[in-house]
Image (cartoon, rainbow, N blue to C red; front, top):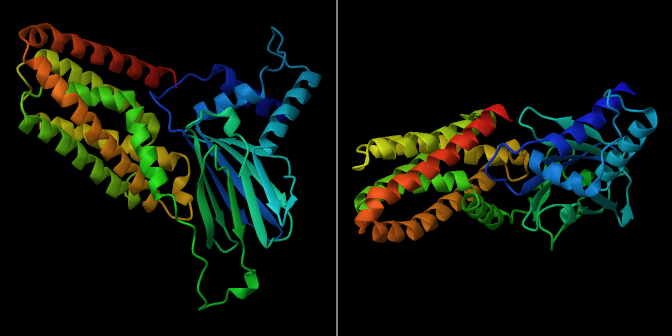
Length: 375
């Protein structure tokens, strides 16, 4: 009963009390499956916001907690069963056309506020494996789910980026006895580069904190040269972070990077007030803060377990960050002509730039307070 009590309170606490700590969500969850001796083990990872949204649809009401904070045995048992049933229905696994029922799920909340569902599907290794992700109807329409399958010896068997209109991975598996030393290994299905590229573009386009940071940088650029410096050094900084993350040379928690990103927005907004003639040497601060923003981009996939996928971390991370850079260039290409047109008006330079900088600073300050004190 104590363990059940903690489990229910954990899930419903997140569902009803969780506060957003990011200005945008990834829109991605992952499943890593690995064959055991007589089973298939699944680890499903959700970001906190995605799990809260899914559970709000699956479990519309919390257990009836009395004013003294106690939960009755009947309410506790009922809530626990609802949580377990919802978790067991997340994946539909078929071995040779036969649907398997998992053992009771295990729930884990990691240090990065991601939720892990651990399920085991007992059964002999099949010839045909079919897996369907069944929670799309409880998540945003743009949500994607990256699913990977490993053999007992960690050999990659396949992977696929699942979407609402294509939510199933089907594989024909080789018999384990046919793979001996020297024989060719099964090649994973690597068809996810464009999916992660698209995810990166969407991430920056819905990343309002990153967009505001870029706006604050560009709004005081008076010519093409200064704008090119800002965009170039921001991009170079991201590329360095990408290389370090891909090589596993650096890994910084989102609890650090997210407040730092918000602080960078506040700094640039305030600097626009103090040095309204156009800050000199802004390329340096752009580069330094670009490293921080890049760490935020890199941590998105690592925090969700993509590094353990069958393609390794390189393909998803490179594709995702290339998408971020492409999206950033598009944003700059749209903003700069508008900014330069507005700068031809004296009133905008006198009042518009300070007003925009004030709005950016206020937004950055809000995110900073939110991410430091309400995580």
